[in-house]
Image (cartoon, rainbow over all chains, first blue to last red):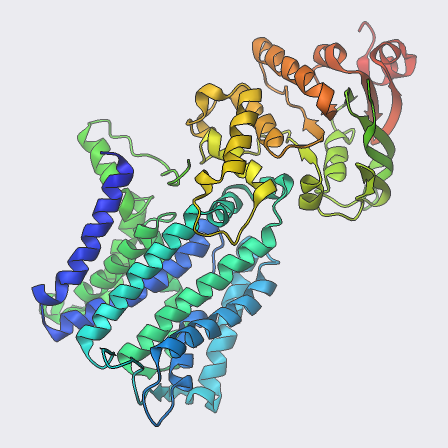
Length: 335
Length: 250
């Protein structure tokens, strides 16, 4: 069995477990938590497209997430539920539009300046919702009616919300998988690997990067939409740079350059956070959960430079007795 | 024997502040002609390639490619129009396989960025061109090897293969022989000979034996200026060149 097949089976099993989870656990707390994690996983995947697949370190991803969430609430009426069929594309579209505007300007910069410019644009969006009455200011706003699709998809029901989020996660994963295999995806990989050569070979790289940035914004907006619908409430903290940072930590923790790394990272990050926040385990100390989480992340990055997805390779080489850890996992699909 | 001019640079000048890196250089590249540019370090040879390929803009002068004035064209546009270049320092995609290096280069000619459903490695145009280019550069046996793990000589071959994969008419080669052993050099020179009939080639090179072996024309640069240009015999016998560059006893 080839490595690629093994990975595909692993991913399929993982999604099957998620599908079965509500019947394995069944508690409302667990279902709500896993729904939230799946939404963050979509968010992490959106950032992975930029950072891991194109080499663009965006530090303003929360803005697209927040705009998707706010659009979902602001565009829903107060007289009855809106249809998912238009509200979801509209929310993702609003985020994509902002991404298109931000990308068209920030992609003129490179490296650390790009990081700063994307952060600045995200902070701009943050303060617009924070300091204007548009989105209810610091208090945020409630969603009166969760959107529906006919009668059979009513997102008020936690289990339906769970399944819909899972559906969106699998869809996003599959979409990005196909996209990265395409010529467009390979061009992004080339830009990440060596943009100078891409230019010299005849690729005008700017439109490629802008398209990736916009698609990434749309996917982050989708995650934001789901988040707003799940919680029935939005506030400016959804656009906070903390969230952009958390998404970066997720994809680094999981392993850059791998779609499954983004999902693994989102689950690991969120579950670790739950663990360190648990008063049943840590008692009083649970208030200082940031400390424990931070230490684990530092250790993980120090000992697993290629992220959690590199763990099997590390174990394999340890078991083989060589003690040699592959320095840098090479990107998949090279051929 | 046709020798149409494919690339013509006239009065090419590049200044960095007060420093004139390339000073009113005019050069013509014809098909079936290997034109070598030699000169000491810092003579402006690589800068000349960067100017011709569009990586950096000209301060003055014009560049004409296949009869079009491309002075204001971007680097990718010039590349699409048939101008291929290799780099002095290896500029490959080290994490990709040899095949994917060539395939991605070839993809430039069939980009179709909107075609999201077809896997790139099933794109017939680029896979075919990649195989062809890798074959010409003698890389058939290492197609599946990760490019970053190739030997230095093979990386230099890959540089050329990636260049060829885009189907260029004009080749600007920046020290393709640098760091190569005798055997590898011989193989590369054979390849250049094979490419000569269909391409206009500009070769920047320090290996004088190689240059005098393959070049049809030689241009000598010193401090950004052309001090001599002619066939190898003329250059070898030019007193000025000897004094400025080749040194006595050559």
